[in-house]
Length: 134
Image 1: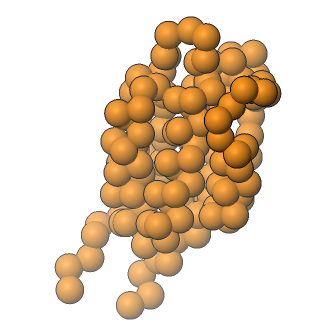
Image 2 (image 1 turned 90 degrees about the vertical axis):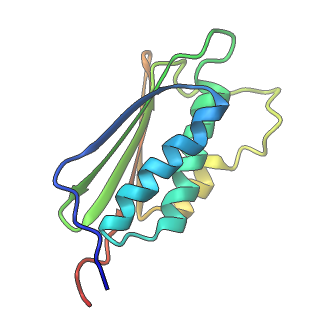
Image 3 (image 1 turned 135 degrees about the vertical axis):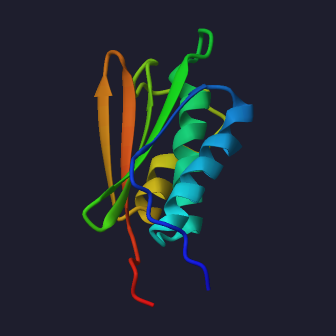
């Protein structure tokens, strides 16, 4: 059996915050997660939710801006950060969604940290890696 090599450096991705880039960001995070044997289904779901939140909420009432994704290994964990330069975390009373995105991310990641500023929001998620046990 051929093992995926452990990534030697962080993955950094910068995209425009538009719907067609959601699967691109998700795929990049999953490909990176596969190397450390993190649960790729959890990573895919959490990253999809975080990126969708940027696309849906980060730049409302203005043109889409940058969406940044960073994935790196820290100790025995995969750490993924999704960030924007948008409005920060502001309520959207007319939202069509259920408002469950962050709760879903919290239920899939081992840890979640939000950093909200006037210059955007970053969501950092931590996923345990299985390592090289086999």
